[in-house]
Length: 142
Image (cartoon, rainbow, N blue to C red; front, side, top):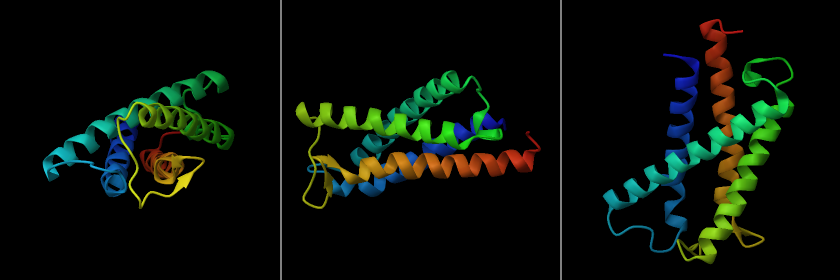
């Protein structure tokens, strides 16, 4: 398996797990468990698109597509995470304004935005980056 495919599958799995865990913090999330699972998987696919777009933007800014595996990876990682958070804030505000979803009473808020979706864009990329760097080391990727 290529490192890129491993990174995509890893981030998809982490985002899907996070979406499933935070689902109960949203109002009227799903009528059935199957509907909830499908919604969470669709959200995780969207998360992967956000992560991929933020990754490509970071690679362009730092002029290195392989930034996670190189010396000096911290600044690009912070940029990648920050871009994910910014897109998430914009998307959350848009979705809330249009009634696509609403937060339940158990969702902690930060300036009107759910804390769990914000934390997702710090925790999941950090976990993904950590695992990809470890996997690259095991594969002998520079």
